[in-house]
Image (tube, rainbow, N blue to C red; front, side):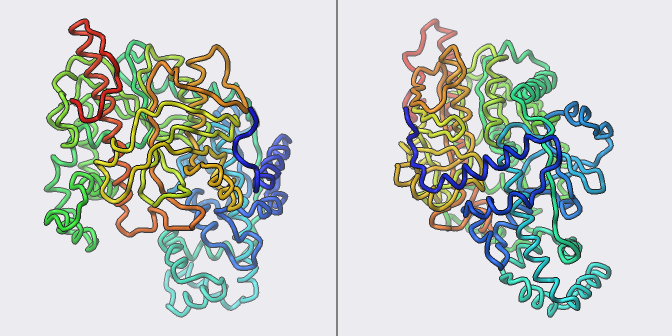
Length: 591
């Protein structure tokens, strides 16, 4: 079967990828400057003004949020899968390097305190993510350096600002004018870098950025080895034998399922509201009053979950955060922190140990008493980046006794819907394998719509799994939309490639139309729209009250948990009575 997605606008993207992959084959450092021309030629939707004189602050801020602050000092970025990979190439003292992180991307990174950053890669998607990000950052950094270099007096004022921490408002206006930055983008820089803003600007003013990257290893075996270590870490961290339990595999986040299954936020509602009332966020206080007065349709539980996340992330919420672990353990939930290559938390949830009276109100109409007899577990992982999804699901499949369901909740760019809508695909075109997957998505729009407040649910959608966030442009996206694809994301294709290997006695194919209706377990994929690349609409992060972004997240989580609980109740009841259920696909309205 030939490629089913048109290629208009894709040639530049393919040239860019071929360029950096061919360069990365060398054992030496690859200079980022050698990629700048092909990067600009892509005209990426995330970096449309790469070749303009004025800084493209959206691209710069996007990249800065996904790289650690120490990037201003970094010259060399070294990529590898495991500690042994780095040690074999001479970085024997890696354990003494400082762990660093970025607010917008989960990736294990270590900094030597000088000029070298070690980044652990879990799949080829990490390469497709890091290289364009570094290139975009360097291009925009050097634009700003050039603009500042014409104003030595202004650089002297930045030096004084960095030394004293004091700066007049007039300096801010001058910097915005010289750097051709809007007031809105300046506020975003202040929010991102806060007290380190003058040091960051000083670093930009003093020298051009000349970064290099080195790929230490990138073999398929290395990725498989890393995923096996991840699974061993998960299995070792729980007091049950995962190989003897039926598993419902969920790829989502680390807060939704745990919040809905424990009632921890509701139990501490008074503490959370005291934190809200004593804080400085007047907008959130007003929103709480509107919800309680039923002036707006927001769900109160969702609001509490949002405040809980803010509170436990603040210094004053540390005591409550410490109480959460034993509370969840008593209810059969074990959090397993990230380890080695895969910087993602996993949660093992024993359905039979849940305190059903604590479950979210939207689950209470189900026959929850039957769960006490369940020995099945939910394995929830913090959704991985791109092709890492294939390695992780393949590893779980190789070790689990029985996989009863795969459920994916992830972010996507929508080409025809609005921010906050939930998209339910049943066709996925995967740029990794060039396969078009058709499958029975167990969810329909009505399963989610009844729990959505601000958005809509759209089923029978077609999803496009892209290689990386920078590896799209407006021409390609419009061509994709013309072909009927409306949902662009990064994980569905790799997950479905792993599903294929449950059905056929060989590795997933390439460039074929693949029917997955014979999957031995059910598959449910839900994407909530976080940005609109064609219309250049707002993203969820642009709203002041970011808990609006939790509306589609929790609507999808409700649908997934109801699906799992109903299926498990049917399994438990069948085991007790000896009657095999006619079909696990019962209507949502049935209990």
